[in-house]
Amino acid sequence: MPKLKKINNPKKKSTRPSWEEYFLNIAEIVSSRSTCDRLHVGAVIVKNKAILSTGYNGSPRGLPHCDDIGHEIAGGHCVRTIHAEANALVQAARHGTAVDGATLFLTNSPCYDCFKMIVNAGIKEVIYENFYMSRYEASKKVLALAKKAQVKINCFKKKHA
Ligand SMILES: [Zn+2]
Ligand SMILES: [Zn+2]
Image (cartoon, rainbow, N blue to C red; front, side, top):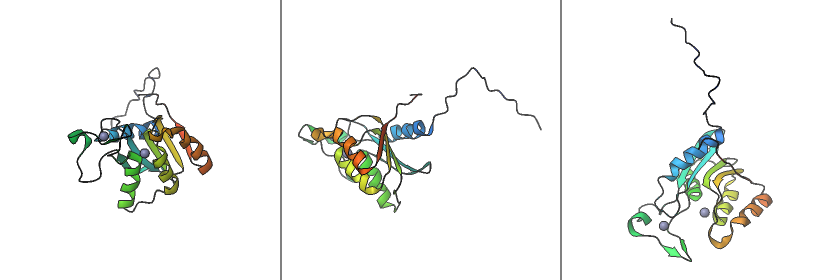
């Protein structure tokens, strides 16, 4: 049996991602399936380091996409799509997957409406990469609500982008 040589170079920094980076990288790949090019958002619901559900922002199932027929603008925002985090929760419901106590990884912080859903779904922690100034200018209210609802919400900046 040939012996395996250790070829680690101690000078070379490890590029192995942390768990946060790993799931945020996956959220970014998920976001590439978005069908509204105003903003591509990806969501990954995780419990005990296992992925329970994913979602990206897109039209309701079977309906035309922004990318094909243009946006549906109301009050300066595109309202056609279901947001990524809502889709991840809906996907879990569709398959009968409990998300109580799970962590939600997001490319962009949740809007006020989605955050209220996150609270009631039993998500205990939200980790996002970019802050999103959402509609109703209520993004900052999300942080205050998180505190009251005892849901952790934190921005995470990736080391290996
Ligand atoms: Zn759109
Ligand atoms: Zn939302």
